[in-house]
Amino acid sequence: MVRFDLEHPTERQLRAGVTCGLIAEAIIIPLMISVSVVDHHPLRWGYIGAAIACLIVSIVYLSLFVVITKGRSNVQTQANMWFIIVCLAISGLACIEVATSTANGLYTPAMLIGVVFVCIIGDRHMQIVVDLYVIALIALISWVEGMRGAGLVTTLSVYAATIGVITLISVRTVSWIDGHVNFRQAIDDLNEVFDEFGLDGTGPGADTLQEVFRRGLPLVGNIIPAERIAVFLRDGTLEQLVVVAAWPAEHGDVLELARLPLFNEALMGNSPTLDTLHCVIPVGYSTDGELVMVVERSTGDGGVPHRPTEEADLLAAAFLRMTSRANFVDGFRSESRTDPLTGLANRRCLFERIETEMAHALRSDTPLSVAMIDLDHFSEYNDRFGQVAGDTVLRSIAAVMVSNVRRQDMVARYGGEEFCLVMPETDLVGGHHLLDILRTGGRVATSSYGVTLSAGLTSWDGMEDTVTFIERAGQALCRAKESGRNRVVSIQAFTEP
Image (cartoon, rainbow, N blue to C red; front, side, top):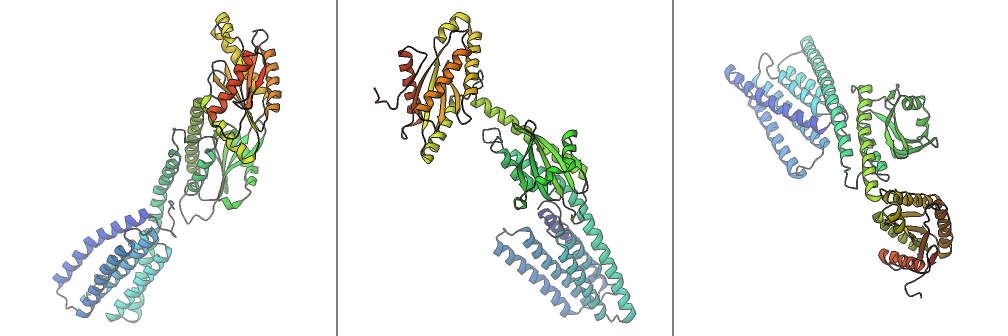
């Protein structure tokens, strides 16, 4: 938990409290010892022995704690340990107060240091216990010193009121300071989660953007206390809303959050929009549409100060930075897997896809076919009309192929004027049919150029590797060219005549 919470102290609270406590003890203990020596009060050695016993018990307890936990205890366990040590220290001060019999109650105010200490490191229960414990010790000291009746009641009333005020001021001050410091820390933690996704190909992409949101949404609650959080993808073309990620996961259906009037208001204004219960934040774009985060705000914030507008703006900036980075990485990865001339998949992407389809074919026991396609007499055309005209032909053929294949098929540029077509769940008959359509469409699209298509088709035998599979399709393509071009030739295996 990053945000300050009176019920769950943070590690920084603990460190700050221990540091302040040690500094205070280093100042006050030598001072009190010096005053006691100067005053020459008679000592009650039994109480001095009790104070020494409190000191020894504290040292032994701290040593055992370090040995048993081996320095691996959590924040709450450490806070409990220091709370017990503080109670022992306060008991020791009470014993010294009784032992010295100082007329002005010299050591009693020093006990209030323990109250402040617990206000910094402890939770609400610890604060209540230490307040009552100090009041009880002051009552005991006053009784031992002979105070009775109205004097005792007055003393306890003054000390109880003082302790209550000190506790209130300390808690509110620590809460305010920690609330502001932890607010910045929560933003830093959120940005750190986003920064873990680099630009090396393993960063945000079509498949990992959802994972980034899944990891980031739990941290949003440390910035804006929230009951539910959801990120929606709005497809402007289809006018559809899709839930990209939600927190907590067990909340189930969160589509009702997208029906809030604030949702459209935030989209139209392209800026965070808030009311008393909700916060809607546009958080950027993906390749499929706009991304919008809806936060259902929590009303029980434990008295922590909040600045909703600033919180929403910083959240928007953090998520916009992440989605912009994701889009950049998507473009970076796309360029490394796409042929720049035709926009088709390149050879690297082709081999990865064939390996994926091979695994699918094995699992589902379905056929897998691959075709190598080549433009006939393309070199002659290129020499006659030039490179620019040749590039136009290649783009035209690529467009014809993409517009005629099925969604599950893949067209890739293999190199030069050669293309490769991957056809999952397709046998040789189905492959022939699709290639004839492509060949006819290609002839129409390139009729003014005098370019035709030849294709070699084969189906996977379930055992060969990717390279061998493509080579066999290439062998079929060679046969198509040797047979007169502008045709489709298929072979099932290398042994086929």
